[in-house]
Image 1: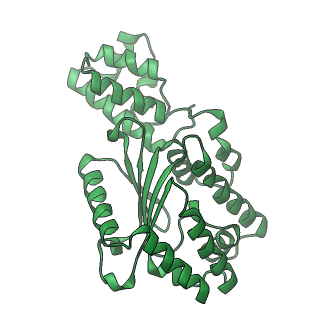
Image 2 (image 1 turned 180 degrees about the horizontal axis):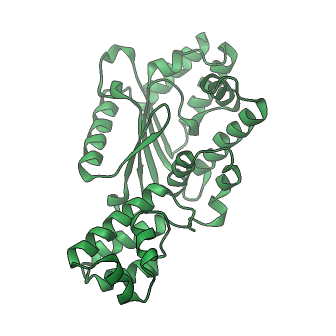
Length: 287
């Protein structure tokens, strides 16, 4: 079974089922045409099983799909839903600790070329220091045994390797000023975290902006979100919304357009990068 994000498998399955329906084939007829078992078609279409790009090509041939862009999109979707390479699958060592949704999120993050995020309450995981990550984990998961806290912090820090990859993830983050002033872990932890933010803001692959209190109400108040973008094909972009017990993945074109527009608006109201770094430094000096 492939180890890619389940959300990608489900999307690919839905697209392939729609194409089969358009041709008027039953799943049994499609399987017979390809010499497969009907259960293979069912597993692919429901997202329970990964599918190799070559099998997607066979399905597209069987369904008479000749449009080059549509074929490229679905084949790329098969790649992103499948194996991303052994070097990028370190998170599977933690599958006994991490829920599937978190592993899906990490897999998307690891294969993305860019991420845009708005945060209202905590520093994004990719920019956290070890002490801050530990304080956040303890606060969010009170009562968890220390060995598990240690493991979750290790995961948080390991995720940050995407910023040092070749090529690195291009990260654009807008933080509400509340993120900088909320005393997580105490003054020393916060001062270190804020200094770390000013340091990573100097990286060419990071664009960090602060949305000051003076802005008042803004679109971001509806909740934090992340938009992942992928190389070459914009139709693979996905929005991730975090809830208390689950994550919601949005991939419809209208959802992506709405959240992309919201991010641009929020970014336009935020301080420029240098002014943001100056504000972070000022708060750190007083932390």
